[in-house]
Image 1 (cartoon, rainbow, N blue to C red):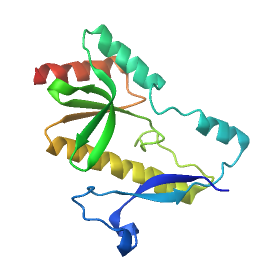
Image 2 (image 1 turned 120 degrees about the vertical axis):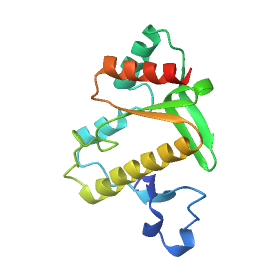
Image 3 (image 1 turned 90 degrees about the vertical axis):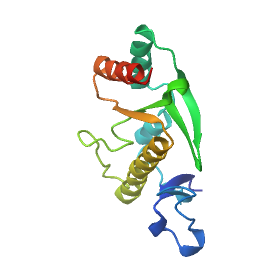
Length: 171
């Protein structure tokens, strides 16, 4: 039996009966989509090993920020209107949300690559991730949050310094 995962689609991609007004979920909407079977056993194992939290780039960045004396919340739930999102690193009192984005999952302009196997599925899935990222960042900014998006390939020290400057500016 095929696995079912959730993907976010633009309103235009949905049949009229499933559409909601944009103010309920800006630009995106959850809808079930069937994920294809992995193209090989190695791919299946690799996909199962992906972590939602505590990725290596995230751990390195948190460690660098902590060494600079900053204290924060990790994997912190932020609710803004109809949007609920877990940011990787959050400074709640200063309303700063930091997301550490993987190059593959969030379509890095420098390193993002589209898989050749199941390309139609991945094109929709990865495009949906990018649209969701944009909608979440926009909603948070409109609610008065500062949003920092760090690519996994960015230099950890430079990213930590950027976050420290952002925190200092808000202090």
